[in-house]
Image (cartoon, rainbow, N blue to C red; front, side, top):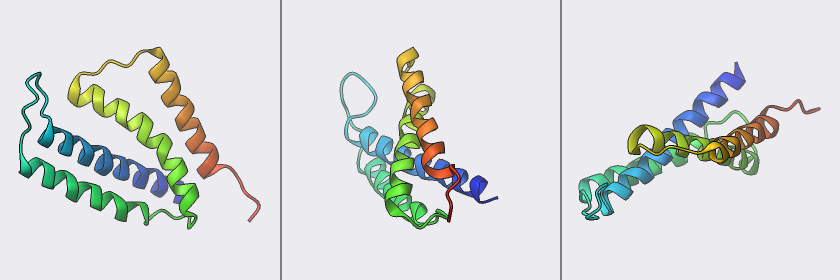
Amino acid sequence: MLVVRSIALFLLAALLEIGGAWLVWQGVRGSGEAGQGRGWAWICAGVLALGAYGFVATLQPDADFGRILAAYGGVFVAGSLAWGMILDGYRPDRYDVVGALVCLAGVAVIMYAPRGR
């Protein structure tokens, strides 16, 4: 059950961090060629989401900050590609996909490998 909770927290953290960064990006740059930002409301929503991400990371069952953030990095990589596909129409190539899978394998090793504690 701890693994399921940990994965759910990683997914929530990714949603908040990637979503928050995307909202700030949209607020400043927008999505069109003209580079017209969507304004301060988007930026503020993004900042709030990024702040919430920081709290979600503390809820992980493992108490080792370095391990949590290192593993989360792999979730962030794969999540960023998925976010780009869903919201921005980005199409990853096979190297993007292989790289994301390698990162997720790293998450599994770092977080869920049996340890003699």
